[in-house]
Image 1 (tube, rainbow, N blue to C red):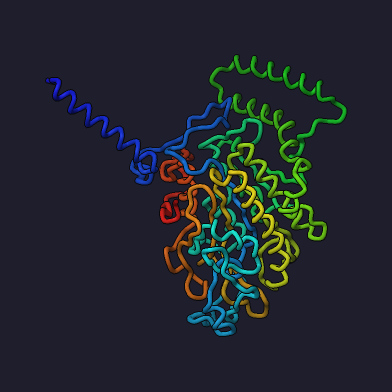
Image 2: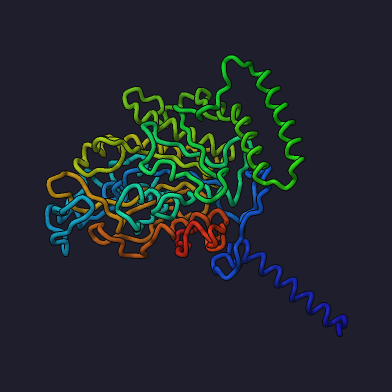
Length: 486
């Protein structure tokens, strides 16, 4: 039986418990990483599939931009400084006798053709291949101990984008927009921006929805190629088009009233209505003529000599404009897959690394550094997580009979910047030659878990029931890399 003393005592304990739960939730520790709880699936209104939804716990970041260097950008020629590789240049890799990798036998250790120099106040050693990104070293959080499950480009892209090497699984952007929706209902929640030269090797698998609802597939377009079949026909004026869409909306609403609870019908209608709104919103957001001359120059979008750089720079500006408008997830590709030879279409530097990377470096460097600076000066970096990644790394040796590096899934670098991460900071390390991850070894699953955590999502409980299994981005693996969190 309760008396006043018992009542006040229990009340005080209850308030203390509420306060503790609030503090744990604020720090994302309220059962967030234990995996002991059940699934935390979003509740989605089929008629408003992209409406913003609450995260599992308070988020550090509101939106994400992923810069994906297709072709496996070499960590040893960009961000992973190895003095021992320089001092033993031309010598055999210790323990690498008769080593055969993806394309064949390996030659001797080969230092980078580019000098590494200390950058920023932190003195982080970064290559002359990317000097302007190097200037921003103090804003970057490096993960130098990444590993992959495959040494093949298509499966490697799949793995980095979806958490699986096979086709048909939801991309990271699809998981995130399914969970969180978007702040802008007139633009896609998820936009994939292919390189001006074409798509990556795994193509739409990088932004596909897999078994998630089709509405959460990334919408792919770039600054030079607008969304297909979106433009109003010239024979129809704007007023007539608007009236037609209003009439169609009325018909759709009446039809939906006859089938209450039909979520698939509601979702289809919502998709058509978004497409209609995009007729106005996409041309506006992709119209770079409103950018100042100084902004175009900062990105390199006005470079008439290096048209590859100018094209990628315009895509970087488009990415910033989408983030400004509240698009939740932007996936920006640097490099494209082209058949018929190695060429210079991506970072796959097998045969002649120095000539190929000498063309790639400037295309990447200025636009990405400008994007980071622009996000920072506009205050967007405080709420945006910037992710730089590639599908795997490169060997510290050159291939026999060639002047390039073979595929290496055993160790490579990715970096983060912006909301919720430490900077300047470096986590993990490869061995003295950059061959294998040796310190704080990290997987793509860990990388994905960390990105989800920064968005306030528990990777172990964000699941989708598919064929009787609770599927998730990180499969049954992965731990948040807490050391990189600010």
